[in-house]
Image 1 (spheres, rainbow, N blue to C red):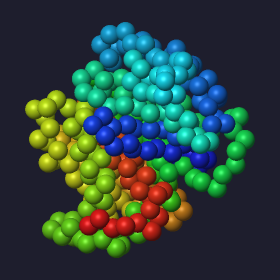
Image 2: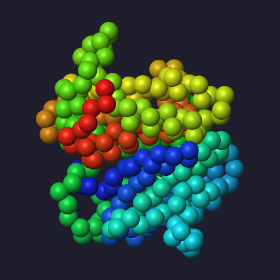
Image 3: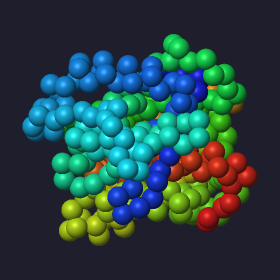
Length: 278
């Protein structure tokens, strides 16, 4: 069920080792850590199985010389404070680091899904997206790294406005516009960071579209692998809509498509009168 209460924002930080970031209010840090600690205890065995060996979860470690605290499975990320916010930053890399990152993302998304009970800071912001992820190498029906959830009405409105002003793709998607360049670039950057060098060429499989009703699709290497609000989802004014995926089987695919979704959310927050890139 979609949670309208603003819990967190998502950010993409570009770089050779890009970051997926959960941003929460500083006042909510203690309760969030309490939830994380409970989830770590409950999920340790399944995370060990997923990663193929015993992994440690680090949180609230002593700050280093830069004021950072290690965070996440095998310390794959770190925590910083930015003004009145806390940033849980997940650093992306190849090999085993992919599984540490997807496990950490899953943990944070799960911890922040139910409304925080002790939050006292009121805001007019709405939750842009609610995300749920799966992390399994042995899922019986495939889709071991599926992503689902809900997209808010406010993000849909931004997507509708973007599609209305862009240059149409043509061909079979004649009523659609391409994704913003920044979204494609975030996915390409992430794919290069999380995949082996001999797979980097498959950035050419990364693309996507936005339709006038707000439906969209993010696509990457794989057998019709995508993360989308599909055209058969009914869109009603002021209501959220379901987010779904197809053939999302690997950690690399999940992280790549999450990066695109997060960059889309970031653009909608930062460029409400968006600068068209098509």
